[in-house]
Length: 320
Image (cartoon, rainbow, N blue to C red; front, top):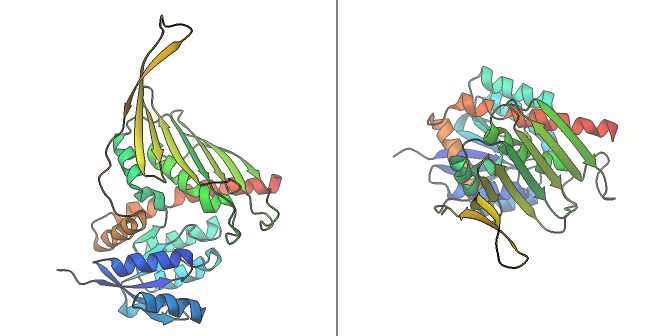
């Protein structure tokens, strides 16, 4: 039986607390140290999950892995410290607060041949996994990710929301988009200067496939939907309820039944097997990458494409 890996977690905020819970529940790891400069907050989370609190990143010689769930602006410095000590890294999205810094982190990880993963959590949604298995020739992907306003989130929706569906579209269709067209909206009076509240993006891919992605934080309820159109099927994913519906239109004809018009569509609702929550599945994959059961190089390469698209999208701020 393999020895549980000793993990260091940086960040005791909302997302950090979830990571702490997942790591502490893992059979393959233990939460050894929780790092947060705020003693009251950090110590409370550390004690809740049986870890030691530290105000700063410790020497990593005695630890096997690091998870960074700190504020985005701190990611670059923290990531470089971790990689300099040759430790595998799982870092929340975005990897850093600029594309240049993200590329620098990924370059160092590649040079040192270190496992690195980004918290693109929807990859591990069981409904997405089932949809990927069902999809054969995606032509048109539409995604909607809308939320009510949350004052605590100071970044715009491109990095907070849009990145997830850009990542899904790239992985479902395959390849980097050739064209990117976006429109940003700035509406809420409490938003930070330059932080967009709405982003509408169209991606064009080699071969003609198209993705339309909408992200908003001025919605009145949470919406997380993904639809994949093929020539003869439509695969509809509810990312919140984590279910999947497949439609195939078979005929349309007028019927002699008064002023009515009847269409026939076959509807299939595949059963999705019970699966762990996405954060748990993501951490399990991280452990597999560390153990060499997943190709670490391929995992590294999968991070940058969505970051490149979002960098292009937020460039629209200059013209907004």
